[in-house]
Image 1 (cartoon, protein in one colour):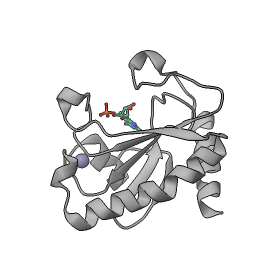
Image 2: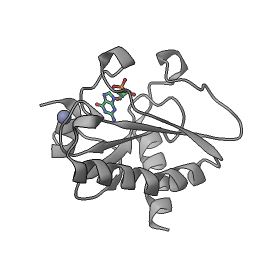
Image 3: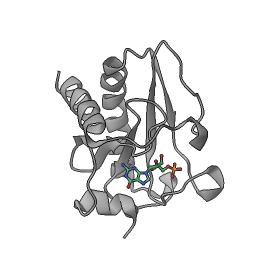
Length: 139
Ligand code: 5GP
Ligand code: ZN
């Protein structure tokens, strides 16, 4: 089972910010910026074009619902939204996932390179950020 399927099953812990029948969103373990969220379908597929129609629609409905709350928490007027669709495009985890990276007015690194990532991060860091995003989604 892939790492993200194990997160869906609860076998690997994650800092969840949103969940519904078909999708799950949680914090990236090596964020490129504060509030870097990964949105995934619970159904395993490597490539976005192979997702069943209903799940594909649910995934992009969730994306639409997450962008504003995530941006609001970090006072970000914009975000980078990215999907690495296959290993040659930089996909490391072979399970469809959409990166949502809020971009505050004070800009950080703009591309998802390992150089721009900050780590290690402690539990408190992730819990605080996940909690803020969850509260903003409920508003
Ligand atoms: P990709 O390069 O496949 O588009 O991105 C995979 C992302 O998953 C990376 O940003 C990486 O930091 C993140 N990641 C890898 N393993 C884990 C994990 O076990 N938990 C979480 N939350 N994120 C992970
Ligand atoms: Zn999977």
